[in-house]
Image (cartoon, rainbow, N blue to C red; front, top):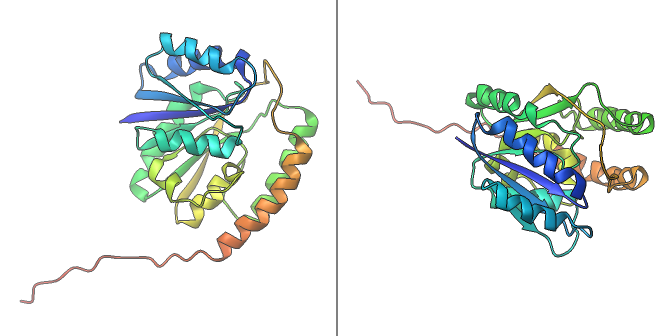
Length: 244
């Protein structure tokens, strides 16, 4: 089955070339796949670098936003354009390791018979600053307590899920931070798998900690509201039994 790898990028010119090479190395002998890089209105030469890579890698597709819309919209753009029913997502900063994708895909298909499932990466040995790790741990604890989303690390961008599942979820800015909770709301199962995590080699994060905290509190309240109003009717299709 074909796999669509969706990567949102904003001003990641120095990370693109090695990341694409790593994805190709990880998947060339494993899957029929495509890479969809969504350029979220980068102001550096990210788009120029992506176009150069397109000449070398026929599996690479590039979509560009005319204005910067953020990670959730970039993911949505890429997933809507994907030609595969199975989606893999990862960040464009090189901190996620593409070598983990095949194992997560195996976990996805191993549990697919149980219904919709989202495989979420868990950065057990996270390679970030002390402040970032502390703030993330606090945020994960608060989120799990309020949403009960069965997820150890919702902030890890490395995830595998079906395109249909994603398109069934309510869209809003910053929704990518709550994918497991939103998936669970529909009755989907969430499974965490340990993944590698690496220090950022080039560039700086496009998102500030304080900005994320402010937006996260508002979004958390909104997702809690959605979770409380979800209903799972447990539908079965009736059949006619022949009378003897």
